Amino acid sequence: MKLRNIAIIAHVDHGKTTLVDRLLQQSGSFRENQRVAERVMDSNDLEKERGITILAKATSVVWKDVRINIVDTPGHADFGGEVERILSMVDSAIVLVDAAEGPMPQTKFVVGKALKIGLKPIVCINKVDRPDARVTEVVNEVFDLFAALDATDEQLDFPIIYGSAKQGWMSAEGPDGPTDQGMAPLFDLVLKYVPEPKIEEGSFRLLGTLLEANPYLGRMVTGRVFAGSIKPNQSVKVLDREGKVVEQGRVSKILAFRGIERQPIDEAEAGDIVAIAGLEKFNVADTLCTPDVVEPLQAQPIDPPTLSMTF
Ligand code: GDP
Image (cartoon, rainbow, N blue to C red; front, side, top):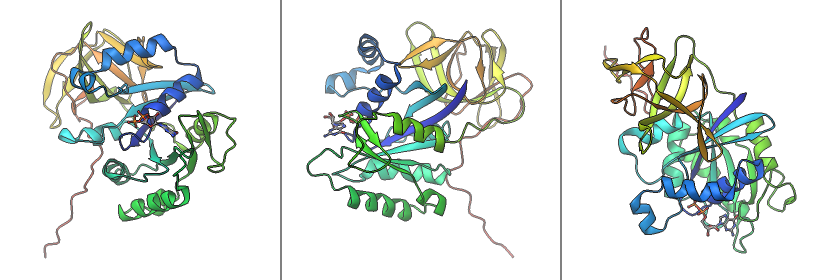
């Protein structure tokens, strides 16, 4: 199946959860009872206490026979390059901006990183139904933000989609609609604008991005397969960032994202984002690979080393 991998970047409350729910709903990958169960499972206690809605770290929807993996980007903190690693799993990002508030600090923080690693984002102006929406100004603010963050001409030429996640519609034509096409215009834009995942040559390599303790499967690491493919039971090793072997072992389970659920699969192929179980020391920023591999993967360099000129 063809794939697209995208991240969603948004300041808190700009509508990320509502948007993803709509995407799941309108692609038919969504069942009400699933959603509740998953959200309870995924939420950590602190978030439950605060009553913040939980967005799964990754979801996937199928649109016109293309699987779209959607990953969440934390906007608040960046522990050890997590945002960079998440962004290096994807080929574009939807920058979701509230039509009244405009770009906010979290938008700026993550967009800056996305632009630096060379992603060409799609801008989504959400909440155009708000009576205080100021769409034209907000689009200009987004443009100014990109420019201030040293976007390239290509990045500044971003496509814009407008809509109301709450009302369940998006339009590439403008903030006045049409409103009867639901999320189709956004799906179509993703298929058209986001490149297919680039596949590297050579043996199986996956870059660890998100770590979790799964109550049933133990330690699990989610990441993108950059090259090759992998099946359960296959022998693998884990390399740290310096290329040191951390662990040798076998993959016990491979889970792929299917809607908001994860399902075991028989094989993960290059380009896909999957969760791997069976390795006890596999950590984020490590590379999971077949035993022949010596070079670890690196998350995209964010700040290219400055060349010092010595004569
Ligand atoms: P998140 O923090 O980015 O995940 O934002 P949520 O999806 O939880 O939305 C935050 C608030 O904005 C909620 O009260 C939503 O109902 C509301 N909201 C989301 N999308 C829209 C929209 O398109 N229009 C309006 N008026 N409100 C929206």
